Every structure is written in C-alpha cells, then in structure tokens.
Image (cartoon, rainbow, N blue to C red; front, side, top):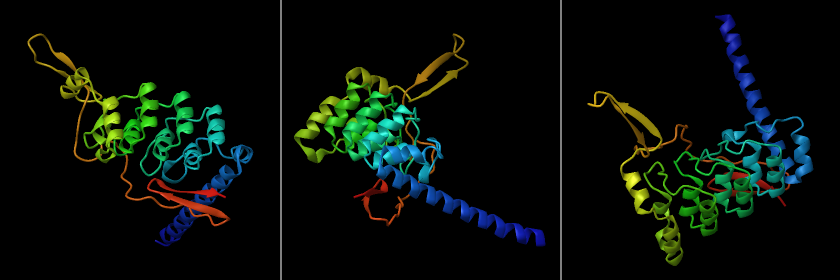
Length: 252
C-alpha cells in the first residue's frame, strides 16, 4: 500500500514533466521556423524530422501553416514524409496548404509526390477542401495532377457536391470541371469504395466483387474525433494568427 502511494505521485510528476518538455520543444520549433532555414537546420540537428508534436503534427505541418516556402522546400529535400497526417483535422501538409490557399507550397508538395487522394478526419481529400472553399486555381492544379473526382467524404459527398452555391458563375465553372461523367456515375452507383469480398455458394463456384463506395453515418476515418483546436501560445514579440485549423505564431 505504501509503495503504491509513492508510485502514483511519481508517475503524475513524470507525466507533467513530459508534457512540459513537449510544450517547450514545440515553442522552440516555432521560433526556429520563424527565424529561417539555417535556424531550422540547427534545430533538426537534435530533433528528427519525424518528431511528432501537438495533434501528431510534424515540422512540415508547422512550416506550411506558417507559410515558410523555403523551409518546406528544405524539408522536402531532406525526404521528409509527405503523406503523414496530423493536426485537428488529421490531414496531410498538402491539405493544410490547400486550406490556407498557399498555392506555391501546394504546387511544391504536389510536384514532389504528395499523394493527392488521402482523406482527413471528415473524409475530405485535398480536392474536397479546394472545392468547398471555391479555390478554382487549387482545383485545376489538383485535377491536372490526377486528383480523383470520384471519392466520397464521410457525408457521402464528392468534391462536386460540396461546391458552394452562392458563388454564382464561379460555382458553375467549378461544377463543370468536377462533374462526374456518365461512366464514373455508373461505377459509383454500383460499387463500394476500397474493399473486396467473395461470395461462396454461387453455381459456378463463387465470384469476387470489387467495391468502390461505402457510406456510413459519422466519420469514415479511423481516427479519434477532436472537437476543437487549441492555440500555441508564445509571447516573445510574435503575432498569433487564428483560423479554424488551429493557431500558429508568426513573427513580425
């Protein structure tokens, strides 16, 4: 009993110290990113590029959110994992770049091989994000590089379905390029996405079906739901810029 009473406070203390260390490391990361490539390179001499921070974000997520093109380019040259998901919406750095409408960064990530059809916690691909925000330049960039129009999010919507209607002419143009052709529609209506199964007992010994679409109520992504974003707080001559993707700190 006495031993248990001693171990519990020790565990709590260690947990507190671990959280404090993580918070300090994240602050150091943001300061380094704000100071440029050389400082970031020095930071990475002691911390690996695969280090995870708040909400499982990598240094690439932070570099994108802070719109540090040169640092993103540097990280890409170091073969950082481009498909890693993290953040409040558990998505790739490319999806973050699309959301923030950072065209140059998005193009850089696409040109270096970021998978285009990865889905976030809401089942949205990069094309969904571009379409629902009416970013026609991003939509064209993604489509010209092979992004699929035929992926359904957690609500059963394709990118075509999420184009905002209030944008009038812009919406019409977006819908015209995102519209599924007849063959794609037929394929979608008769299939379930991403699965295969076999039916035994058929007269000819069984048949294998390839499935393209499956819709369920709720999230289609097997990640925990995060209800809200929390801010990164640094007071040293910095400006906090808020968005519904979370808060990052940009230096003046």
